Image 1 (spheres, helix red, strand yellow):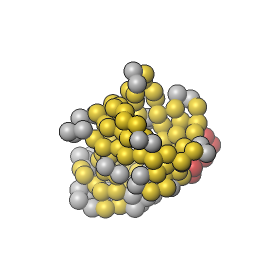
Image 2 (image 1 turned 90 degrees about the horizontal axis):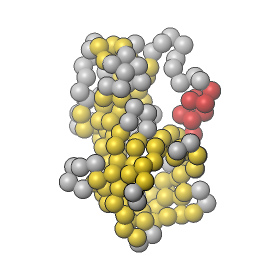
Image 3 (image 1 turned 30 degrees about the vertical axis):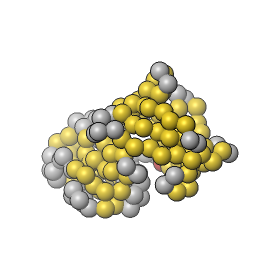
Length: 164
C-alpha cells in the first residue's frame, strides 16, 4: 500500500511492502513496531536499531514524540491526498462518509445510528498492523447508516458509517 506521510509540513512517499518492510522515499527499511502494555508508548526496531516513541492521536494527525522531539504526522493514501488538496473531501450533499483507511479489525464503535456527534468525537476504533487507530468525526452531525460493529473485519476504503 502506498501512502503520503506529511511530517511537520514536509511530504514523504511511504509504501508498506509487507509486515516488516517499508519503503520510505527511495530507501527500504526493515521495521517492527509494537505497542507497550496498552500505553501510547511504542517500541520500534528500524534496520536493527531500537527506538521508543510516544504516539498521541490529534484531530487530524498523530503527535509523535521520538528522540526527544515532537512531530506532527498525517498519513493518507494517494487518493485521500488528492481529495484533500482539491478541497473535495466533503461531499456536496454535506454528508461525511467514513471509510476504512486501511484493512483491519473493528475494536469498538462507541456511537449508535441516529446519535448526535461533535467534531473530533471518536466514531470507530480500528486495529491494523498491531496499532489501534481512533477514527474521529471531522464535523458535528448525526450518525446515519452505521454499517460495522465490533469484531468485524474491514477492507481498505470499505464504508463504515455516514455523518449527516
